[in-house]
Amino acid sequence: MNNIVICAYHNVGYRCIEELLRQGAEVSLIFTHEDSPTEEIWFQSVRELADSRGIPCLTSDINLPANVERVRALAPDFIFSFYYRTMIKQELLEIPKAGAANLHGSLLPRYRGRVPINWAVINGETETGATLHYMVAKPDAGDIIDQERIEIFFTDSAHDVFAKVTDAAVTLLSRAWPLLRAGTASRTPMDLTSGSYFGGRKPADGQISWKKNAREIYNLIRGVTHPYPGAFTYCEGTKVYIWQSWPTTGSGEPGQVVSHDPLLVGTGEGVLEIKMLQLEGEPEVTAQAFLKTRQTPITQFQEN
Image (cartoon, rainbow, N blue to C red; front, top):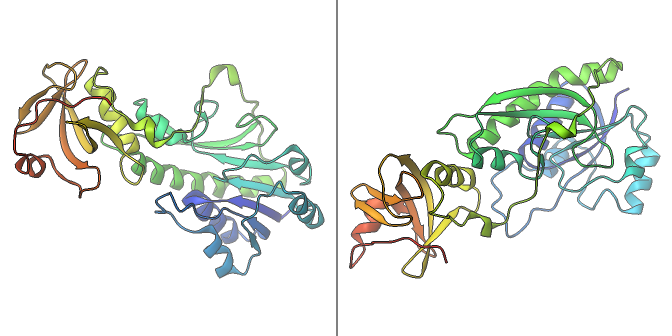
């Protein structure tokens, strides 16, 4: 059982395809996505990988009737989904002889749903990982094949964690694929009652609430900093992105500037040192460089 159809995007998709090819898998067809003009493309291209390996690749939705028939005609042993952004319909899941499996960036059943790595950092988790599981009609709910854990350090950004999870995904797939091919991989039913589900995030969700404590605000900032849209606040009516910060002890009213050197801002509990920031439409600078450009001292950051 070695004939595969793959749905993939992003670094996880790219690296997992590379691993399967390294192990001699026969990839008959790849589905991926067109890059969005509104998204910062910082990751590797699955389409370029497919082209370089001579593998047919489509950017149209796998669920389209014509694509369903293409997959049916290929009669694959497996369908894999590696960070593909579209739910794969049941009629497709029923085609592969040995099943359809998805790689998810969390330790399922925790953090089912969208952008699990960002959510894990925002929520201050100390570990996450990668899970390979069978796909069913319900998202991120099928039997678990295998998992690989990684540690989240307090200094990690979501980008740092994404790199760790990508490596974990490759490690996981390297040991799972021989077992899947041999028909000896394990299946552990997923207990959804012990898990959690999170939806997608929009740029607007990065607005800072200064009433939260300093650690929570810090976690938000590192959870959506580069290459993601960023956490933001307002100063004198102007939108300000905060790209780097650090929580520390002290007190001050939420949003109140309590020090200029270093730049410390009061929160619901503790204070937040702002290290790197950016006025909308201007270059990113250090907090001290930003303060030197001001005609009058800053006294407050606000929500809109």
